[in-house]
Image 1 (tube, rainbow, N blue to C red):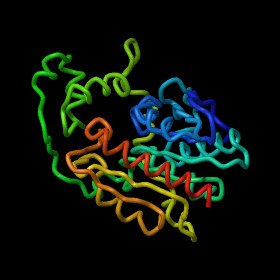
Image 2 (tube, rainbow, N blue to C red):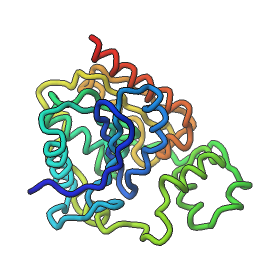
Image 3 (cartoon, rainbow, N blue to C red):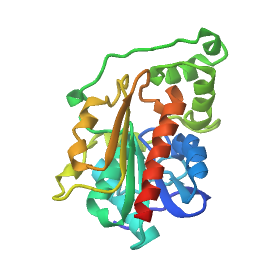
Image 4 (cartoon, rainbow, N blue to C red):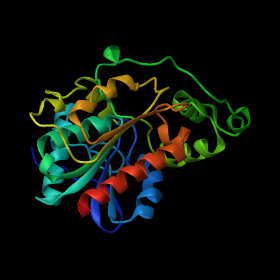
Length: 270
């Protein structure tokens, strides 16, 4: 399978930092972290659309998570060659990022997993009960019922700030369809052929596993089981935060992400 054609937005200058988004969204989902990256410096952000998402075309060859992961790996190899880069994977993108690390660990400077998918089988996940820590009827009154329902499904802390960001970075742009066809393809084969953590050696570069304690979609407990394979990882499960992690707790997410970036910088000096 050849390397796919991917839409990418590149921001800043320095070492490559590649963001891999989740299922049902596109590259915009991780854009709010751009200010954190730019403040720390040293990085060129690569915000890509996975095949079939956003502005990236969908090849006929991608019919499963395994083929999606292989396509991403092929693109990274063609793009960066033997050069090193860091990876950020959010939600479903966290599963794909773990696959990449398992295949080319020598090229990965560091790994950040934001509310990552740890167990592909929904029935096998350990999930908390759905909970909302704060409702905001005043903001809800300004939104269309359908758009608000999408936001409210994942928001634990409803707020004007979170809602405005959700509109900008998650909701489908006006004039575009909501759910891309690739989503249905992936549903038929949502897991990798082999768990990424079966690699013989652990990944020892600076890592981050950041979850929400109220994440009723991927949970936070199954992610803890990843820790033995990432001995240089910080794990945090934020209170009053769900699958819309940054939209619920932007300051805490930004602080943990900045700490990971600083640990990466320190590892380069050492």
